[in-house]
Length: 251
Length: 292
Image 1 (spheres, one colour):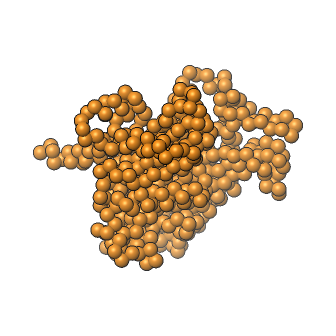
Image 2: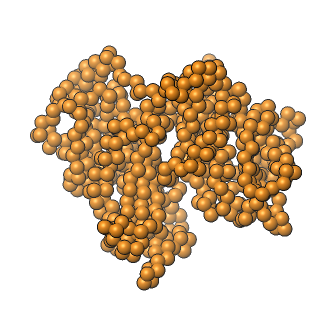
Image 3: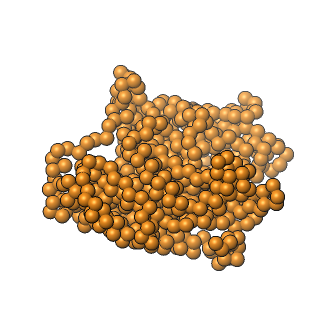
């Protein structure tokens, strides 16, 4: 699994991030706080605007739906009340999708959503927009055939894995805040409430930092080749800050 | 959606004064391009152009549709340029600015109407099926010179793109995937590139490849599109400055020199990329391309 992120690489935007993961590549840019148009202005809060642009073709209702999901999730972590009557403009440009994406038969709204959220968060951090907490998100897929070896739930599957495990019965997307609070739960397909609960717990394990110790982190390394998402997020930002603070450390 | 911050009077004067002394803010000579960088994606038909601080990504994709009823033997080729707030907060989604309209019009004239791409080769079955090619131009970072950068990006992406091969049996056409047969490059007739000249001091001084600050204080611009054989595809002039007709001839001479440099660079990069993709040295054997 290759999670890669580059921060603040665009000159014009206030904050930017490029995020690459399993064939998904997204460029995120944030402008803010900037002047807001009169009709969107809110007296006690900042306006958040999210634009999602596809690699190929112009936006459709599907993108509008994704935009509203990302918008509502981010609004809950941006401290909109501390920058009232301004605009925070978030643009997410998808630059490439995995080849198997279209054939996997899973709605791309679900598979793309965690990546969009991560990109947006990194861009927001890069633009120094006041946030109440960080956010991590993961997609979980449940294949229909329980008999096959892939009958178990799949954690953050790649497009190839999804194609192989076809047909998929249900997909869930969860987003958690830094203090282990559920921010977003988007599910599609057929599933029982118990299954949803299980998936939710599984996602929480991957998303949130384990306060107990090292045990879980190592365990995950063996299973998915991936540490904790929150830790990864922290390390990306930490590296960037260290890089920027070299002049201070050197003296 | 705030307006683009205008250059202040002092800054404007400063740029003018420097230009009169033949100095540009970034230390370039008056007729020099910013450093150009061109990278290709893993997929075919993705070109990422960086011209100084300007960055443009062009992406070509192909689809199969029915051709237009009045053009039965031609495929469809479209260039889509839509600015996003990523490049500048002044760009609003769904409301094209003048710059956007001019960009799409120039690209249309320079690439589509100059027949850079042989659309007839995109036809599969006359009147029934053809390839619809579409070039999406994404402006990622905006620091002037969008027209030049986009033109380079689209042309490079077109040359990099490979379309799937087809087998036609009577009225039935089968599209072969990349696994079944190696995709074929497009038939490109010539490579037009744009060079923008910015005019100052009522046409006395001109600059090649102005950056955003220089673009904002210019009085007029002349866009010359030509290919490396010296054939002029189009000349467009915007803005109020008067330009001497003889000066235009000079422009085409300068443009030819620049276009030759640029095409050579693009060609080099394409060859490097082809070499990288041709890992086992089997490409020549696999190729399903017919000689023109």
